[in-house]
Amino acid sequence: MAKKNTSKNAGLSTSVIKAAEEAARQKKSFNPKALYAALIAMVLLTSAGMLIDYYTAWGNTPKLIKRMLESAEKNAIYKHYSEAESAYGTIISRFGNKETYKEDVKQARLSLAKTYKDAEQYLKAISLYTELAVDYKASNPDMYAWLQLELADCYNSILNSDEAIRVDQKIVDDFKNTDWAAEALFGIADAYKSKKDYPNALKYYDMIINKYEKGFLSAEALTNKGRIYEELGKDSLAYKVYGKVVKEFPEIVTEYARLRYDALSVKTAK
Image 1 (tube, rainbow, N blue to C red):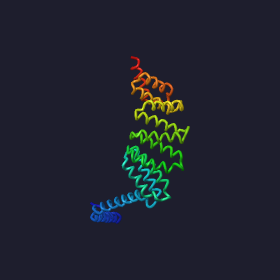
Image 2: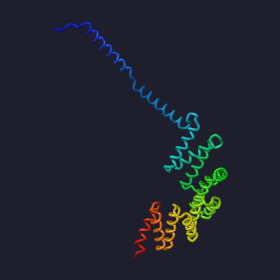
Image 3: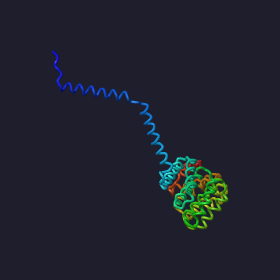
Image 4: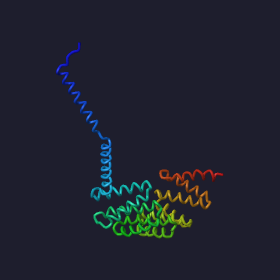
């Protein structure tokens, strides 16, 4: 014989029925298309906000410029030169006439010149380095010297050795007995080497070796002397020079000098 339903059990049954009916109603009213549309709208709004923030920084100009510089520098590092050039150019054109941002614009111009050089757009680099050198000559002598060295290197890269020598010689004259002068002497030697004027190249490499006896530039100058001697077919002299680099500059010897020393030790022994 079945037991009668108690009032408690009856109440539970009623609650369960009501919950089931409510769930059915919600299920019936559920609209997946509306939900997807809402989600897409949220994504689009978020993306739009991120895009606006990226390009405007919501009116925070210093933050925007910093972000643009960082993006350009990253592109330059990864050799995405056109993107870097575009970003630097935008900073220069948008903020170049505003005194508040002149330091940021200076940085953009310096970085753009370096980007041109790294991208082997030497004529553009020469033009911008020349402008920058004029700007910095009176206010920052060290920056001026560095810009002149970069300028001379660009000239040497397009095989305009005479102009490279002229610029480097001016640094030697204007910055006597400094590291800038040492770098310029090396540039002059390289320029003569590029134009295959080996007597003058050797002369300037020797000036560096004699003046900066144990420095990095001396090791580099000796290595380049070895290259010249090899090109002239003077293997025994080249071997002696490379040997000097290996023995006297063990901490800064180049891999090239060591390899050539080992190769010529076999060749000259025959």
